[in-house]
Length: 450
Image 1: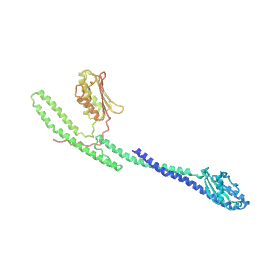
Image 2: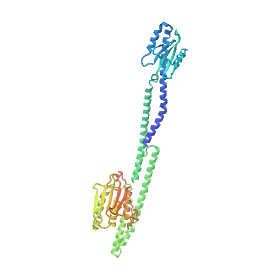
Image 3: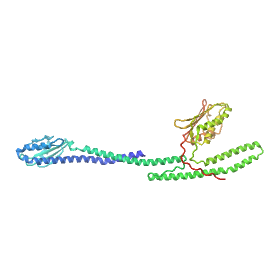
């Protein structure tokens, strides 16, 4: 927008200046010609007045010649005196032999003073000298094109400089205005990005033109409303999960009263798993949305590989874990990341022949993303495989790969599978680099009582 504003200002200013300066340049040219002509006319009239008495006496011709010679100095228009018999005193006037010049001189001898523009360019000033003994003489001042428009180029350069200066001033003002508009817009966009990332404490500062201030106010109102709705939703989810504790506790007591010890233990384990799930729901519901949890992908991968190592050894599998020593933070909760890695390793252990080796690799891509790869050397996925929950086509529910896919995509990452019968299956999860944690913190909502 800032660049467009500068281009618009430059184009508008250039058009306005063109409309003003073009007539002004023509006016300065005309003014210069009129000024030079007026000076030449005054000189011709002075010469005619000065030599008039001398031409009245035939013996004073030398005086007339001296007067004409005195006014013919360097860089001044040429002044000549044409006597009644056609004799020229002073520099010979250019084009005096052309018919039009002769007609002009003949017209001037009738007593009329005028300015004449020959076809060859320039301008002639003709002034008659009355009282000459042999007839009317004519004083002729010849102006060349250069003399006629002297000083025009300087005036044009001054006007051009003024035009360029006005354009630069207009661009400077437009740039300052554009910087203000663009700065306010970008700060508004950064606030919207923070809200999209889950930082519901972000608020926009109303600044800039009225339209942007209105948008900032409405964005702040929207953020407040979203925060209120999410807080209420988390509280409702936590309350609902908390209410489940009572019937779960009753189930545990009922399980303890069973006479069959094995059956009682089995049901007790199921009830304990249900209690952990309820506690997990409460914990996640109370976790503020903007406090996006981060997990170290490399550390979690090493920890899960070590967890599954005993089972892999029991199945005669060779395992290899390659994870960098530097932390690889990704914007995924650690329990979700653990579930995704467990699902991928569990698929290898459950759906490849015993003894099939597999490896886990964690690396940082050239783009700065964190990449997790679980690869095995098994027979590969069946042709009927479909990456959808419940339709894997491999004799399973398809939940494992779907958990891994959703974990990557929820973090704005990618999920990819490469498989063939000779090289096995390669599942790759790519996670974006975790953004810095927000500087501001807010206390979590109070836990429901009961």
